[in-house]
Amino acid sequence: MNSPSLAPGKPCPLCGKPSVADFRPFCSKRCADIDLNRWLSGVYAIPAEDTDDETERPRDAEDSRE
Ligand SMILES: [Zn+2]
Image (cartoon, rainbow, N blue to C red):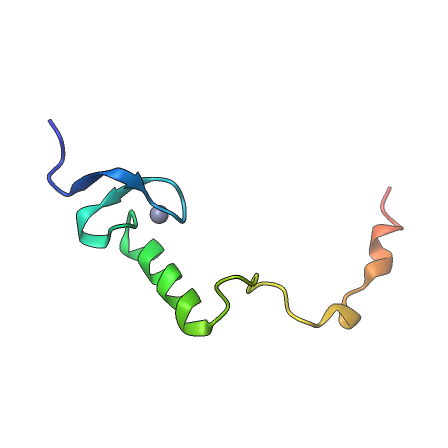
């Protein structure tokens, strides 16, 4: 028996899970919100995590690992 809320066909473009009719093409409100936020932020193609504070990051730490 198929769940009535499932919309077979395209998987969620964000996580690859089966999409849900209520939130398609996404699998959940969470994924839909993530996508929406990316659009609103205008950073859809840019990794939002990467900021330009690279100068403050202790790069030397990589050398001291053992
Ligand atoms: Zn998803």
